Length: 194
Image: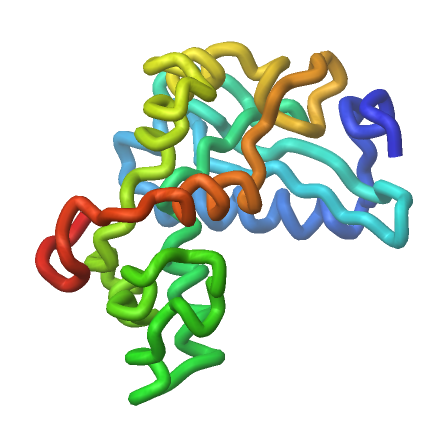
């Protein structure tokens, strides 16, 4: 799949009909002051069958105040939104006493502090892991305001955009390696929520 394929909307009428029904229902449950402008939050939907994109389309508003519409090129800064889904998935895999398993069992390259850090600490944000964005800046791999700047230049950020340039993206593996290089934690696990 090349970037030109991704940047052009493709529509499967069955998926389009489902999304239009969803948007109509959403408009009905919105408070009256939100219904006046007709804007509703939406989504970008991509459906693939094998390597073929069979549906790619934006629905609803990316910004309710300005009315900017969602397109296949809209950048969604997920940030912390995905944390609860990840936590739920972990809870589907582990239960009860298993949540007290040290993360060193899974991240063998981490220093000894991983022996004191548990799955439960990670889920509850009490693991005391350093902020990977701060580590990235401290390692001089990025400028202090790199995250803010990159969100204002979507052509260098979102990997599916047609106008995307070769950007130095940070992978999950690189973040894990950077965290594993930290020999000391700012505090012990289970002391603070962060």
